[in-house]
Image 1 (cartoon, rainbow, N blue to C red):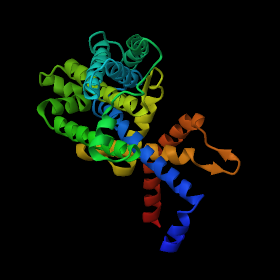
Image 2: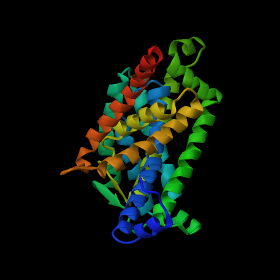
Image 3: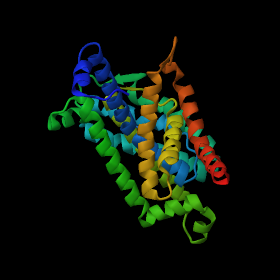
Image 4: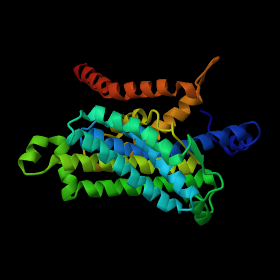
Length: 322
């Protein structure tokens, strides 16, 4: 790559290079923005799949639930901060429903989460009254942060979402170190042992799945305020993106401790969005990746993330024998 001397830099600022640099910069900021906005969703997926060992598909319904509640609250004159709090509460209730179906009605966890996800589609339509609600012209958290910092939107939005994601991640780490959090960890690790100690694992599961979907719904509220609209179909593929982010984060950064695993999940969300942005901008001759290929890209990323540790171990083993 050519050294970025002052002469080269001056040349790059001339058209058409200027527009290409700015578009690349916007794409990078957009990937950060999306990564941190969906970072809370990834933390929720990490909580159920990795800590509780509970395969939860409710997130495909609780993310648009958070967006719907937030959008309706804002259009009815509520503060965007209150709207996010209401969305978080609604997500917690949705997760509780899944937990109750599993623990009290003895429905398989996977089926219980699918039933809740399906029901939430109708609930979201009922909340919004139509398939989508626009937030154009409405105040949002992003507007308030922009006026506070004076930065343009493409810079202030990733900073705001990054601050929120890091604060929530630190809060989750603190929670998992409390007595209740240790109970949640023990329930996912060894439910028989924790039951023998007199802990009601049913209540722990209900609370844990509720907390997970509260984070997912909070993420949906942030995404709705960022995109300027809430749509009933915006949750399609959420669980796949969440799992991909968790796996990528664990593969790249590791997850031997809670602190490392939580921040690996957040950074995995950012890496996933950056990888998607790079893939969508890739061109191989006449072939160009389009948004319709997003699910294929996600599947490839997950396969690579899952097989990378095995390939690394095989490579190190062959190198040590050589």
